[in-house]
Image (cartoon, rainbow, N blue to C red):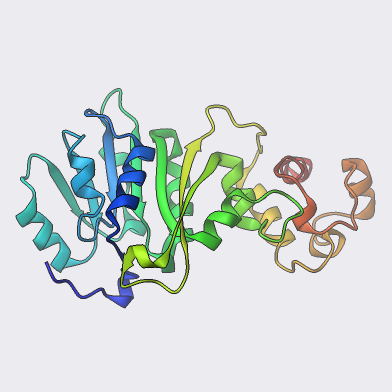
Length: 257
């Protein structure tokens, strides 16, 4: 199929076969997995995944691709969900005794919103493997006190164990993006290392703390905490948000709760 990539859907199609095989090896699809692929595009991952799977769910918004996919694969092998992934309810796919495995070459323009959209469904998810902009993956796995560490790092690390698997050059795609990509594995914590009593409060604290990266937390969190509060928490108010661990953000939110 000669399909013109559509900018509004952030389409860049993976075409490098050696990289595709490396991704499949990392995912390790098993015959009876309950797997869903976000944005299958022209089937770069779909076809090799189906070589291992009995069935695969696909979430696709592009009508041209949906029509093409329906002609490529028998109905008993794939179920296509014609949907905007940001409005898709992943829990609807669950069957007794199975957790979801989620894979995808995510559109760069909405990759972070997709990750946040998946968080409420994590109890139903076994693991997730995603191709993302390299810069985004670096932020996801970043350690405290590094320039990449930010709101995305803290929010995702609270819920997930993440592993940077490989860097993928722009030349592996058609059309080639102007940035490098990376492949990441995300596995929900079987037991949360630190438990926030109120996750909305936790998210608010993290967002406020990183709202002005150059400022100290004494300034960014002044609407929530006094100097005495920082002393009680045993946290230096002269630190910046990027210096705080996930555990410290949880301690702040639980103190406020």
